Image: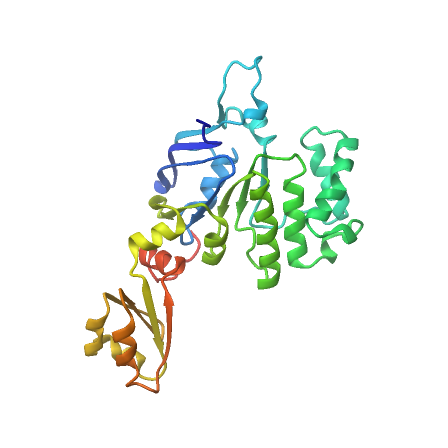
Length: 319
């Protein structure tokens, strides 16, 4: 049986006595995309930083198993972060939340300089640059500096740069934040290609449609703890009623105390919208037809509903 590419056990990190990551365990299999979702301050970025050796955990173990870097001369089969940071990082690709491209270099030069950090020869890097730029749909921008690119282009260049060393595991921290829908969809398409090529991905995101589209499994964090884990549709079926009816408009909030509340298994309010969660929406929709001034949306339960049920609807500021 093939071991996980990444195994995290009992990970803990405190700041000023407050737990930011609290006894977290998970693994990523070869070719798998694991999504990590949670509110601001849930511990997502700190977890990635510890997996990258940028933050030292207070407790726990982070183990990598990369078959391609195992060799008879090595005294061990598993690699541990941060003790084996250098050999591990040669097999990782990273796209951080924030733009770290060098503004003084062209797109091609950004790839060339980054490849040198891995000890790659210039000839080997230059041989990869055309295919990386083509993968990012940036072949026509090879001699352009990042400041002249759109936000979506810069994110794709960051992804191409993370692939210079042909990593087996990509760690992507909110890679599509700030992108418009078209740019986000193009980024998703590129990530799907990487998964089809057998790459593994650890992805943090605030976009629930992104998580459902890309991830084989999800890890839901809150206050540094794992509160749910599983396949997206399985988690939805486990925690939610199948039907959701959203009601909004003048008088919608009055429905919270109306008799038709009994037609739903659960009722929640967010702003001016009332959410009815039910096993079967037909009777509820018939009753709502008596309120023509209201607008309704009937849809299946989704990951956003799961996220809000498990972590709450109250907006949190960054921790």
